Length: 383
Picture (tube, helix red, strand yellow):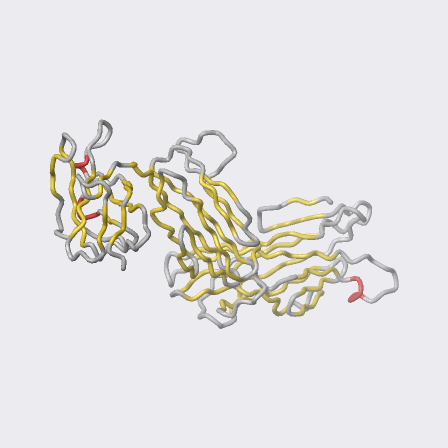
């Protein structure tokens, strides 16, 4: 293969040797357009010169990139890549010109890129239009013929359509952010087509082989599940996805990938401070009586490494149901020799049931640091 001009709008190939016709050449000239969706418009023209080149010096494929910047709606610029197949037809003496014509062929009229206008997914469909017949060629909807030793220009017609073919593949990207970004590795499980993978969020990069993102391309439309094995000492704060429909699940997300969509999901984790708590301070065992209409006192204890008075009492949740403080405030008390945070929760609200042997508490400090702690319990009054 002999070629030049990749990355430009003027691509040449082949070695004419002694034929003297010059290199084969393909040039794309774009147009400015004003159009509505579902309406055909002129994207540009393809100019082709069919040179006589030696065997083995031809080019079989070339990518054509079409970049469109919209003024309405403003702020949308999209790059579309189309695979062009270049069929360098062998020359056979005595055959008609049509049989010796080179062919520019669009295997697919659609790129793999879609974009959104007013919340609706669209794609740019291309077809070949009229050919300048004064030079030597003709076209069909997906191919453009040029006679040997001659030039021809074919219109490239486009339609911005919401009719997305079902076989257009999509892309899923998973990004990890963590606070602090200390290089902790997070393990993920993916459904068929995504595989299992590991991400970290080291800042600065710790020079290992683990990245903070992974992209799965060429995915058929369908539902894909991604879950994170949340490490001890961390919480999964949020999973935020853009580019398509998703459904949240425990420690992950179900991604509803439509044809051509490019969906990105950011998994954000925060480190969690393990704190000591005392359910029903002064009691042993810590009995929870389901017949009680009162409250359950829970103390967050100050230690040598943690100051319980820094906890925001309005952000603390207790038990499976995430019960909030019954009085809407915290109480600073000396439970074990220093200032501790005592909170009260209505007995019926935490979601503790008969047979539970422990209960947990989560929250944040006034500085935004996540905390968690648990203590043993004994459930009574179950009958």
